[in-house]
Image (cartoon, rainbow, N blue to C red; front, side, top):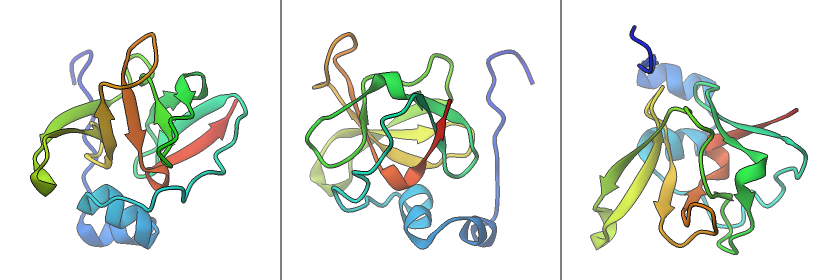
Length: 134
């Protein structure tokens, strides 16, 4: 593997189902969306948010903000984190989907209406993340 290349984690559908909750499987593997407000209890402590599927470090608590949307929101991923984007044209809309480049987990979407310094709002499904305190 060359520098900057992300290791790809591949599992069968049965393997993903065995390690994920039903909701996490629906969101991360089938591109679902959890109900807004279902993860309003994320800690406020210092720490990082990891991919629930492969444990890659994706976002830092320092970039999390209250967007009022009912989903965890961040203004930037951690530098060098395996966070990728693809165009999403489902539901007759044009959006940018956010996924984990390490395991192809669907995380949520990114919108251009966030706070400074980036102006971005990574609106993510809480069930796709696991918090790890410093």
